[in-house]
Amino acid sequence: MLTKRIIPCLDVKKGRVVKGINFHNIKDAGDPIKMASWYTKQGADELIFLDISATYEKRKVFINIIEKIACEINIPFTVGGGISSEEDVKILLNSGADKISINTAAFKNPKILDKISNKFGNQCLVLAVDVKFEFNEWWVYINGGRTKTNKIATSWIKESIKRGIGEILLTSINFDGTKKGFDIKIINKVSQKFHVPIIASGGAGKMEDFYNVFKNGKADAALAASIFHYKKIKIPNLKHYLKYNGISVRI
Image (tube, rainbow, N blue to C red; front, side, top):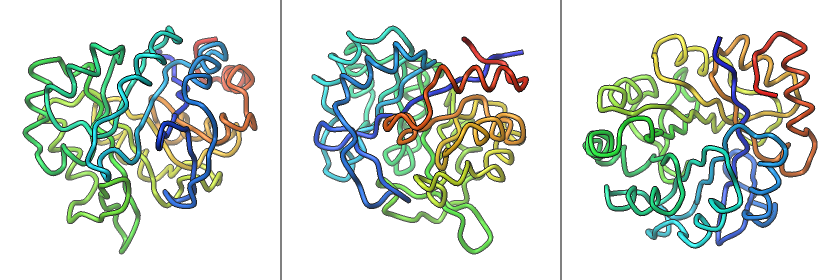
């Protein structure tokens, strides 16, 4: 049985880690380099860094921060934000990232997924999909959750898998930052329908939420931010709780 992964997420804006609710009401949460180092010591399985305003501000991710974080950690490191070309991916991988996460650029130009997968391998290509439940369906949003598209989540994911993605970071905008639990319905739907690993994101508030997303959502990994940032839940305690309740995790 593959172990389930616990992944802290650093949502970064203007060089600082921030957190909001439903992608709004953004508040400062700390220094990304110090937090990355702390999460490594806490036993996080991976770390995801998302420059949440890079695409909207039409700029590239802050490479100097990526390089400093890469020097501080020894766990898989995924970086996203402002990626729109093979050259962007090359720069990030050379700067210490193990994987890249792409969202808006891929939606606007799906062929970029083929190019990245063919050149660097699908093991380093994570598709970030932000979804919102409206009118009895989960719709894809881009531009940091600001813009609704005309595509249903499962349709876009199906196309992206054919183009060579290796993993999906699935975030529920409805549940993001609410601490009411993950959106089990969409996570389970995607996990059962597709063969690529699913990272569940949006809504974690208590340890039981992680158990539910692994047991009932069938997620391969669970991502959280504020509950880890503000130390409401500590990763070692969470992992021991999950293991005690029959979920395979790396201690």
